[in-house]
Length: 305
Length: 305
Image 1 (cartoon, rainbow over the protein chains, first blue to last red):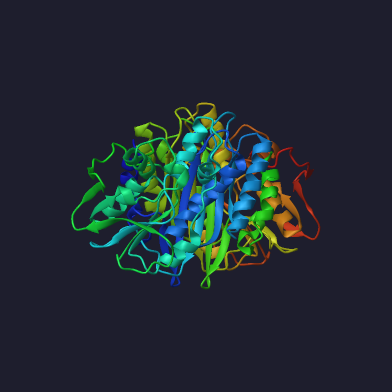
Image 2: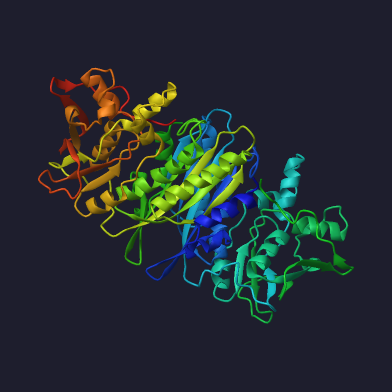
């Protein structure tokens, strides 16, 4: 069963409005008038991180990907609960705690609780984290983009995917893409600043194209993306690929954790972002660049299962 | 590194009062005057459930153990987030969703969100769940028992442990202990009724003796337990063991999910419970029965790692 099929079977259990039909990055509960945002992400050794990734970085990433979901709802973190697996490697466990201390300290987020269990020797590590936050700016969904809205993305895309490719071939430079892969930065301040002004927002976790297509589908709209507009870092641009292939590679790579949002095209943005597309009545994603229409790649991004 | 050592290293990251020093069953946040209770438990195939346990029962147990933590804080569930691992066995996944539907429906608890990931073939399943609830009766901690308080436990103990032992030797009867192991009942109504009246409360997850000792230690008190008072079901009593060994076996078995609480000895209980001990100034757990002092068993309950 694929992740998509499985989630479809779960949807029947998620009729509560706070579940947002399991279509959003996070659940949002109204508690005494406060919008409380809840998200849970699991990362698996060999799937979401490499067995020889430094444990400090694994801890960083586990927290960062969850805080990124809070950022996408404009929420400030109230705390996290960690589901940790001991595997008998004391050095790894101690280094993981150091990384957890770094990232929680950096984002001023308390550890509230969780659970620690033992895994059988040799089993891949499975690490879960739940983050809870409070959104005072409206907790934008991914479902409310409007026809005529522009699609914007913060920062640059494809860095983490390039970093992963470097690590997989044993390279250790350039440093910036590797750091983007191992220590993603949840855009909490940007998300809070954007939330009151956008119609829809999510984070880019599986790739710009697939996540943009998800926002369009969830909003019941068509979306056209200008591939040439995709913001790329100097390191990503320096790869030996021709322009279109390079842009498609960056736009389908996972782990960016940039913010992707729909807003009126003439909005004055409170943070720096790049306009990459336009929503319209209809359905489906289309791509173009300076040379004309771009056929959709077979994989729009990273898909589990 | 043992679970206990690991949690000690985490404690430095959990200075927030809502974390309750990682000593309690759950975290408690004050959100707009409401006590919001958060708990996360992970269960591992081969550790917390058997590879041939019916997937419906595994789903039930995953939810039930988390709702039991809410019950222990007197909280009503607002919803859960599930961290699920696909392993390529579609029948198992579909049956798990059926079990999830059963237990969430039974306890009127919505699925709010979560994450679905793929595990490498052959890896043991690791299933996480976060439950969020609201405690309007004070969210009793496990740290506030008072000298002179009685220790009470709901229901009977040792049933699930006996059920596990039966399954491990291939037995399928008696049914009640097996059901206690596979489909524990979180005592949500009892927890809500008790919360305003007790000084300290927790659920019995690792065994009566170890959990009672934890409450005494967390409260800075000594605790004396009358082993003969331990409430046992007819099935557990019918085991071919002499009285003291049988009671020690039941009092050190895990997975009971009864509520354990400290309250004034003359309190009129709102729910049925059995008095099993008394708190006093000092430290340490002591046991006695009709034949005199009982030496503490080497293992007071189930310990991970």
